[in-house]
Image (cartoon, rainbow, N blue to C red; front, side, top):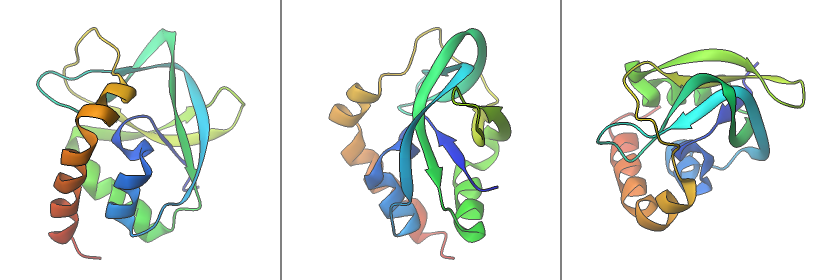
Length: 132
């Protein structure tokens, strides 16, 4: 299963286009029992377990094995792929954060307005150094 629940920078078509060379199918999704947290000193978020929360994001479907491997490499050792249940009963993998977090929820609208353009350049640089 290559369905992937994304909640941070990978929810943006601009980032997926740069990393994958295309935008796969995206659909709104939520993951109960998880929270999208800000991270100390970083513009991107981390997904952390929180029984009182529900994480908003997107479900990516139709990823090839190669695309999934590329995203695994992109997320590096900072994240761990976990299988989680979505609010509609489906299951998907997600990248859960393994490090320290802040007690604040990440704001995707603020990221889009203030950080997305520069982060897209960062992703393009990463992608050029990681050819398939």
